[in-house]
Image 1 (cartoon, rainbow, N blue to C red):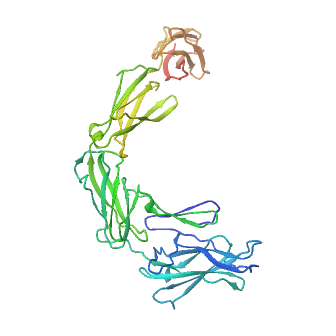
Image 2 (image 1 turned 30 degrees about the vertical axis):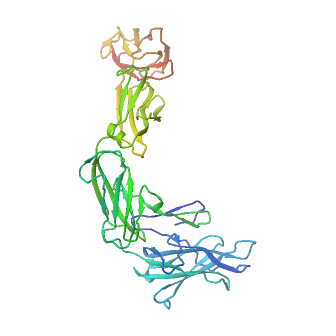
Image 3 (image 1 turned 135 degrees about the horizontal axis):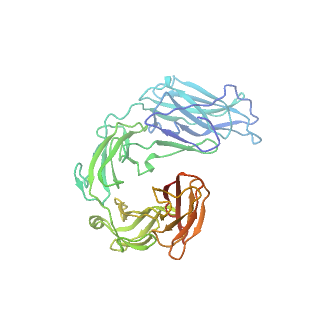
Length: 462
């Protein structure tokens, strides 16, 4: 772990954490001021506990990171100092060990480690810090207390739901109430859950510009974590599944050191809750603007009224687009859509209920062929005719309305744009330089500036 100026986050990944500590070996030079007791004490990037009866639980992971911010009364600069850390088992204070971080900067976190060979699983330790400048030393800090926990919870959690029984179909609309239980593992502090079976990394802390940890509480994220009501207890959480049909929630227990248990799962089924999407014109032409009526699933509406819809359109002239439409009191809504997808219109709609339930998507599709028709008497498509130097006329006819021009190119020749007539057609004359296979590509452009699909016309020159 390098000490840069940019904020960082530390992750506990499934109970493993890699550490690389940068600490110079040379002793600190004497500071002009009096060293002051380190502040901002942290262990394992979590807050120091000064209460011996409520220690911080940490996995040793081979060592425990300890840190504090040293200081001096010297206001003229930041001469380097050392920070001395002492640690001992609470059960036997005579077994004290000392580690030192040299060349630390006053006002910045000074990190060192308590080596793993002095730490035993299940034991509680105290540690304290002292600033040293030359031959002067500050008072010791108050002790911090940590209990080493390298053992994962002994059992997987138990999962139950009163409103979505397992392995059967359930009407969607209400959030799923889950009761999660430690299942006899008396050290469980909370639970982590996932709809995918892949669990979020546990972020221990962020860091400010002075490398001071800002510990995060994972249980502040209700989308992935919930705290147990007591150590070894249970928790109740209401969740909205991300999709209908066969659904699985994966859960694992976390002990006080954030060691995870093995994961277990809860399987259930949610009946489809898709809205209906109905256009006023069931077969609109390209370029038409059509009103769509959106209606909620009746079972979903009876559970919790639909308050809005999310409409997603694909492959329009400006790319994909998503927008929300407010629903009326009866859950219905209307919206206008212009049919401007050059290969067709593809609409996806989900509803959102007052209780946060998001429905399965509903789809509406129509395909369009917006390529122009190309015809030539002299050079028929996929046929042969004419000859080198023999001119031929190529006529472009639109399949979509509103065409104002065509852009075409023969083989590797530069593109040319020609205006369309009042009826949307255009004709061009062209003579080949030599015999053999040849080709033409052409697309139309509408008065609104939409470039339509390209047509590829192949022929052979005699």
